[in-house]
Image (cartoon, rainbow, N blue to C red; front, side):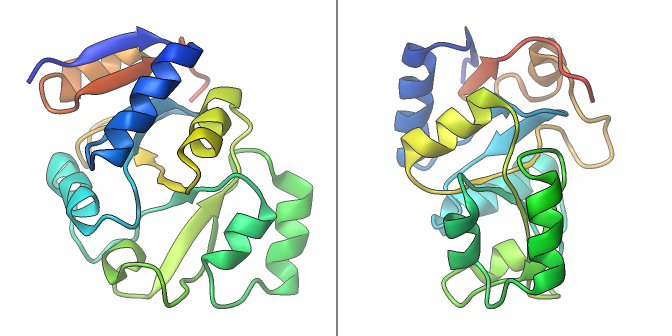
Length: 174
């Protein structure tokens, strides 16, 4: 498979959404590292993330959500301590780990039944979630144990030929 690398644009986002809807992964920028995104409701797509990363299926996979309403729909409870953290640090690089709701795939929540949630401060990550209309997975776009990528070139070196699309948002802060 050839991996496309596209600079962030409306057209690139549209292509990414179509790829996500087809069940394939896309790589996108966040405020810290490049993320590996798939539809979290598509079990085959989620399994593909574990395969790409070489990651144990007992570990949970985080999600990026567009807002608090979407976050609350994904968990069984959003306790006051989590709400306080979210209000203080979202949007931003904070991932809050909570008990997953019934509608989430057990594969996403790992052996502990928890899911990490985040509202990203990266405009492109948020536009992707909004355009897709659903949360997307937010695990780093690298093989497990390898350094988390901060540039599209890093992702291409590690996952080129494995993922169909990398959305290039420039060099990230890490």
